[in-house]
Image 1 (cartoon, one colour):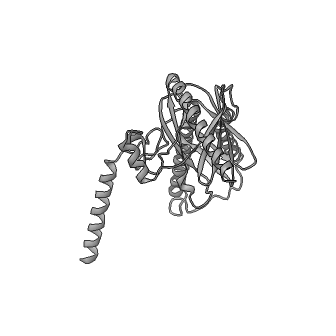
Image 2 (spheres, one colour):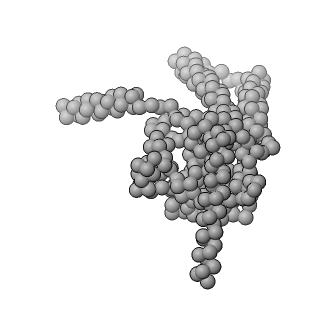
Image 3 (cartoon, one colour):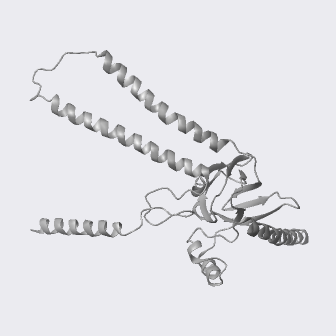
Length: 292
């Protein structure tokens, strides 16, 4: 009786758990992770859309191959078991089968390879860029540099702790829905919608990995080496990423934040950012000179 009661209790708990999961959204959001997500984050660039299509296409091929092999195993188990086939065949070769199980996998690989090479070409060939920025991974934050006409500028982007995040939300500096825990930052990188952004990525200390899922961007940030990638955000909003290469103690506390805005808002931000971060650089250089 005790065993039965435990069994029923376990079954009831499992059913309640499944029912609870059924009420939780399983589709991932765009720009940031969602609770219990079971899919890729929403695509905001042509590269990310191609990645999603290729992912779904590959899953279809995998499902077909898996079902075929499962059906073949079931057929063999029933057709050639000892009871149904008491006198086994002594055939050692079958030319048709050997050709089939060689040619068919090759054709499947070709079907997979063609869009795979197209995706690699799309990712690796950087088109003529409208904006070029340099991103440097550091322990444990990111630095952004804009090489714009009329003077370059740069800034550091650090994660907001819980107190800073609450203060930023309370002061309406950022909306609560756009400031997820452990992802919101003090200085977001801002880019205009519909423009091609070339991103040059490097590391200042150890190897980091610059990753923004909704942009389809994932590239190593290696000290002494300048890697290059690109994206073209087609929707306004805020898009988060993280370092996805274990880089030390606070690896999980160096988020990436890109805010995609209209061309008009970008021009206004650019003018303000040049003044703001130029003043910050001047102040830091004066402090460094005074401390000598």
